[in-house]
Image (cartoon, rainbow, N blue to C red; front, side, top):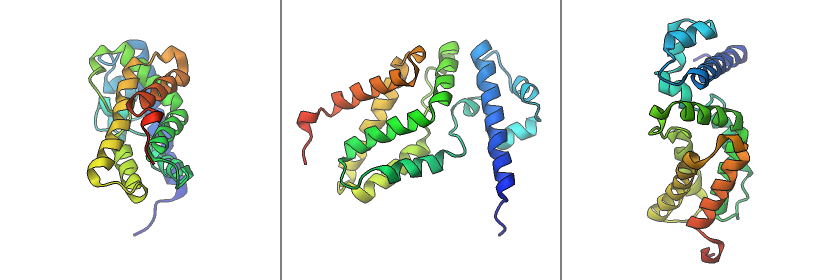
Amino acid sequence: MIAPSPVRERKKRETWRLVHSTALRLMTERGFDAVSIDDIVAAAGISRRTFFNYFADKESVVFDPDPDDAALWAALLDERPPDEPLWDSLRELLIGYTTAAAERMLLQRRVRLASPELSGCSREVADRFWDVVREWAATRAGLDALRLDLTVNAARTVLNTACPHWDATSGITGLHAHLAAGFDFVHPAERISS
């Protein structure tokens, strides 16, 4: 099997980002329901077929992870010291990821605020991220499956709870403050055991 050329891969990432940023801009201006796929493809200068090569539907254009996210996740996971407590690693992973994805997350938040019908969506961080994190944590935490899942799911819950309370005008540091408060509330330092 022939590997895709770097130029072709770069073009695919650029097209994904063009469609994504165009859609988010339109949705921020008009609201989610007021923007059609036809509006997005016209503004991005692409065909409907090209849109559907990258996104399954209008919701996925808002919430799907960036094509380079898997490499970012791997780099963030590799940065964590092997002796760091898992809860601390999970907090730092979320801070690192949200810092790297800050611009996209701010746009997603603005789209949600402009489009109340999206309030029930919980795809801000894709399931794939949590699958990767759980797999990574299983190799280093030394926890049984139940405790491992409880820990990873607790971190996910902190993120999923913090995001709706986040005022996007506070920038990504506002989200980070909510994440820190959530991590401290769920697992305060005085309860951490070795």
